[in-house]
Every structure is written in C-alpha cells, then in structure tokens.
Image (cartoon, rainbow, N blue to C red):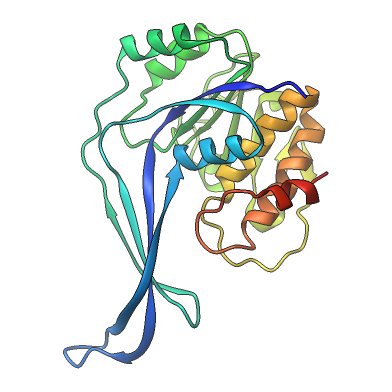
Length: 255
C-alpha cells in the first residue's frame, strides 16, 4: 500500500487531564474539592489530527504555532464528570508567508489538512494562499464564518459552526461536510447515520473524523465511502475518555 504524505497546518494545544476523587465540598463555599490522584497530557487540535493521520500510516509534516496553548480539564475519576476546564491561550503569532513557502518546498504532498481553531495562527488570506498554491485535495476544518468555493477544497465543519456561517459565501454541496454530533453527518443532502455506541467523551472526535476522512479519500477518491468510514472512526473515538488516537486494533475493526 502506498504511504501517503500529508501536510498538516493549524493551531495545536496540549490537552491536559487532571484526575482525582471528588467526595466533599469546600467549607469555604458550595464548591467540589478534587483530591488529585494522577494526570496525563495528550496532543490536541491540529496535533491530534496529525497523530491520527500517523495512526493510519500516513507520513506527515505539522506546521503549528510556537506558543503553547493548554486546555486543562479537572475530572472526577469515579463519575468521569468534568468539574472544570481551564484554558491557557497566549497571543499566537500568525503563520508567516515564508513558512508557507518552505512548507511547499519541503516535499511532495498528496493532500493538505488545515485544522483551524481560529486562535490566530491562520487568517482568511493565508487560507486562500494555501488553496491557490496547491492542486491536490485540501481538507479544511475551520471555525471561521466566511468560506469560499474551490473545486479541490473540502470543508468539514460541525452543525453549530454551519449555523454561524455567512450563507452568501458557501462552498458547493460537493465540498461541504457538516457533522451533526449524535445525528450523524450531512453531505449533498445525504444524512450518514452514526453507529449507536455508548458515548464516553466527544473531545477530539472531529479530529479523528477528519483524519479518517483524509486517509480513506486518498485510498479511494470516493467521498461518500470516505464519509461513512470517517463516521465509524469517530464512533470509536467517543467511546474513550479524552482526546483519543486510534490504535492498530481500532484500524482492524474499521476494515
């Protein structure tokens, strides 16, 4: 099987999880007290997309911001209830034009994946520059409200983001994929029903969906089949706590 090469561009973060026991209230006020037991840090946002692409055997190059964004979640181990999330989001230095030029010089890519969490690394102009300088498929997951229509650019957004879009600048139905959470995925008026699973945590499910979509599309060049495949991959992700990278066992189950 050909090893594909993909350029990943976007905002990344550290997803930090602090686990503990919550069995009492703070005497200073009606606030739960978490007795910390352990914790872990996982790659998040664009770095999670990158990790899942690697899980599929894809060779990747990740371009992301130099500043460190951290999302810290405090979780009661017994109930898996998230008590609090604290975000550390510094001002992000935007992607510079020379970085884009160097990225294209780095190697020959089968696709570009843009994971844009709108933290300041990518602006509208940079997105269009990338799109105008690459002829292969480009997959964009973005929180921006103005999109554009280009034959080789596929936008993957969730339902909330779709409702906030400027509807005067929409891609064609062929190039717009809307994830609907528990209701599935919408593309060209088709609703792809999700597999019924016990949802443990939806964190990072969109990243898993995007990586699986890219992998299967590169393998087949068939979008409908690729969306169905990505839908099943995301169903695996939500069965696990926290940001999740697919394992070899998961990949076997998707065949």
